[in-house]
Length: 119
Image 1 (tube, rainbow, N blue to C red):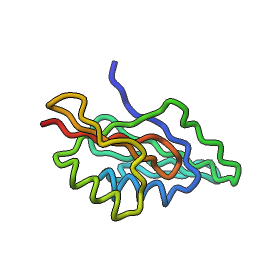
Image 2 (image 1 turned 90 degrees about the horizontal axis):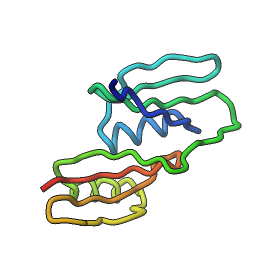
Image 3 (image 1 turned 135 degrees about the horizontal axis):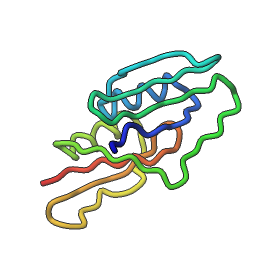
Image 4 (image 1 turned 90 degrees about the vertical axis):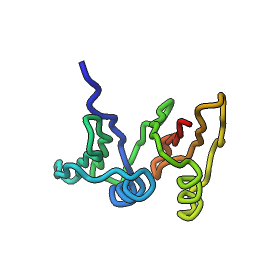
């Protein structure tokens, strides 16, 4: 069995796409309408982030206990990038051992996003 995607119900598709493109570095893989809404799959590998917008003004995000983790070659570069974008760092940076550092932000929908760097 393989893990295919993590689904996030979004309140603003374009804002969410911008975050995952500009901050996380994912590209739109597939994009298609569903009734008045839209589904977008992001990522180039086997596992994707699926963004779903239902087309209504009654957004009810589901973010409790969800955290998506992304590895970077330079944690300092990502810290600078999120600061430039005006995104608040909600936790960290932390270094629980000598070989891994990480920090957290929230995406536009309140989902915890962790960026980590292995040394």
